[in-house]
Image 1 (spheres, rainbow over the protein chains, first blue to last red):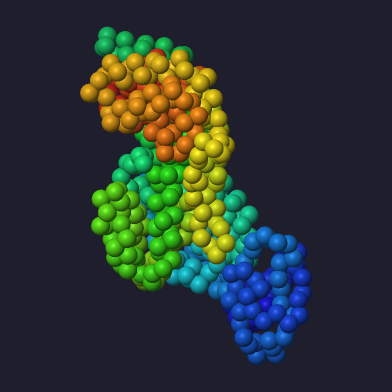
Image 2 (tube, chains in turn blue, cyan):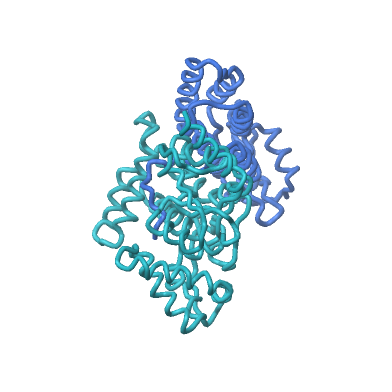
Length: 191
Length: 295
């Protein structure tokens, strides 16, 4: 599905979108009008390309293959800023660490505005990253690398479930918990 | 000075002896929390070479936490704002005393999600964010759990614990725990308990010794153990086995030299009955007599 956004520098890159899906194993099905690609809203018109309702659409060729592209991507400027902060992160400087952590937390919260219209997979990675940055006061080098990878994945308009699983595994391996944000819950392990 | 040296010596001896520890659900739940709360347990466990837990502890974790979070996720799909969600929750759970705990957990979860945003984002985005966090927490909890221990004992072969949370058709979270019945036995709990009769006798004797001082949970378990003596297969029923929770977790780790738990009312008697060290890193944070590897 080629959209106006993709042609005007929006979040969905046309070439990347088509090639990635093709590599992932897709079929061209003529006459499909909407809803073929999970996580993408159907667009009724595409004036730029002159596409109509009968235009070929991309659908997954393998049942159960979960993938999605962002109808609108996450705010690229914020993502770049987050990676820049991580690249210059200095855990030896107490003041700089505090400021960088505050900046990262703020950026992640801001990213939710653009994540609102992104795919569920983008939202899941953002949630994993947020769990991580909210649960610590500083970051090790290995944690920084894992988070950078997460932010870079968020800039990718097309994500598959494997992206989420890999980031999750990396963050868990670095001591983060996907349940960290629930810390304020009562200590209730009972039935 | 002399006291310090003696303490150091004690820790050194303990370091040689205690290299493996078996964790109860209570500590696993504490471990998955954010840095500040998990830190005492993380540093306590750092020097153990072998950290185990039980699949039955995972079932309790699933029931106590993951199901409530999944319920919150389900309700949050029916509203437009978090404010509206709190109202729906109160309507559904608030009027029934039995649901008070679930309501409390859900409201605390909402508060936990809202705190870091500090009203910086719109109400609709807050709801999206909360739903993403709930989804991620529930779907990835098992991965975290499995990575958090060296080994998970599964003496009961509990099928209900082994079923991972998943996204079902229509994007719903499936954290269901099927019912078990003795006419459709799918676990090994009865044979597991039969193999450990000797340990069960020791536990019963300890509960009897405590008498009225035993916790309500242990008293309930004591009654179930009497049923077991009469008919072992009665244990293969979910509303029966649930009453043996801590006992099943403890016996699952019977080969481990030390237990670690945060609910002393049940675990002090269990450790005594099974002749294990009991370590509570949260209670002993400020206690000099803590015996753990590396001190």
